Image (cartoon, rainbow, N blue to C red; front, side, top):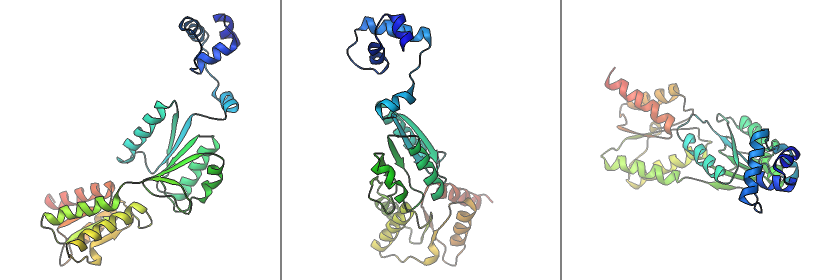
Length: 259
């Protein structure tokens, strides 16, 4: 900064104001400082800035899987809002592993992120209490936090599933299968609840064999679908608990039509 100030013929405070986008500098002076910055290849030392201001202008995002079609747009939305506020987004995937989620969230906190957004993989988030008390603003998305009081943004999983199944019923289906994620996952249980509510509202029974919760691995989902389709009273429609299940069901049904 001293080199920039000397080249531009200004004081250190003026350089600081220009670098940090603060007011109080004339356009002519700002131009001279920017030209000196470009000529000297000056870059702000954010590590030193953190020590002085106590903020990193970074937000941490813990996703399930960035390759998932649901989380890509979510990541982009968070990134755009962070950018509008001059913040950098740092993200990582938990791969639906509670221990990996914990390690990643704490690693982001250790790097002094100002805020943390978590899509939970686990059901116990007490490990974040010290970080939240220390001032890390924390919000959970898609699923509520476990065993702590924290802000959360949720979709209407119950209502969406109920309406989706009601649409199938309106189309004439009476034996509808439900294939979803692990029952420990909030979205899975809410969507199952919506499925049951729609079936109950139409006075339709739900056989145990029509419901399958567990891993969304293609082999597991395909096996569940084939079992429901091969039963003495086969299902005539499916409600897919998430997009991974949907992809596998489409492949299973396509194979049946074109063996």
